[in-house]
Image (cartoon, rainbow, N blue to C red; front, side, top):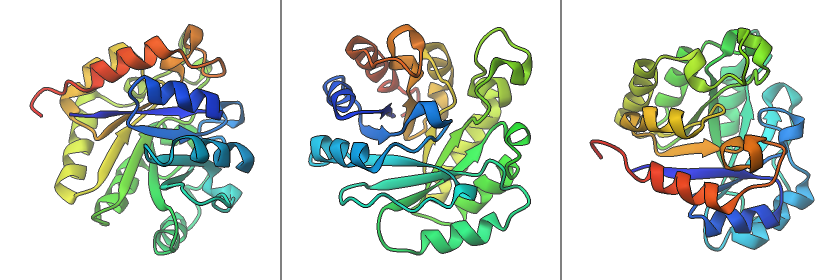
Amino acid sequence: MSGLLVSVRSAAEARVAMAGGAAVIDVKEPARGSLGRADDATIAAVVRTVAACLPVSAALGELIDAAPPPRCFGVGFVKWGLAGAARLDWRGQLGRGLELPGPQRVVVAYADWQCAQAPPIDEVVTFACERPGGALLVDTHCKDAAALSLGRRPTLLDWLAVADVVEICRRCREAHVLVALAGSLGPNEIETLLPARPNLFAVRGAVCDGSDRTATIDLGKVRDLTSLVMFSPGS
């Protein structure tokens, strides 16, 4: 059985996500990019609202931005993307970060790594799976429809075949690494990926009014997706 991670941009949205059955509350600012960092005051407000009930994660931008973790107690997970890091010593930087005290660092593998100028996804998945007890997020960076000449926003499945996603999740389970799937996933994509059995499906736009990731979270949409992800074939 999988759970639903909902990305929020305020404490008010966090309350809606909790009421809808979310398993993890993630804090980010979508106007600042795929893993856009919210202001520390916003992160702290969300922690005060939900940390006693649910785990809280926070997006901190890209590794090349070198942004430090938020200065508030109660964030369980933090993550930096690897866009623009293909030619950097990303293994060394991530490895050193994973050894530091504080929130657990989540390794982020971009399915659209070529577009993001990030390390190849297989290399990042291997890096994560060499560290049992860790966590991996498979996401997309290039949200513009022009990236694939589509008339809509690309999703994870525009960059990866279902069989590839299933294999990544299998590798993570065998390595005892928590895995979350993201990348503009909607109900159709999530239903298609249920057999992969990730620990979490991570969403923002799919639970917002008009499926607009900069709009407000809708309680009914959160409830619908929570019900959907709780059924995983073979679990």
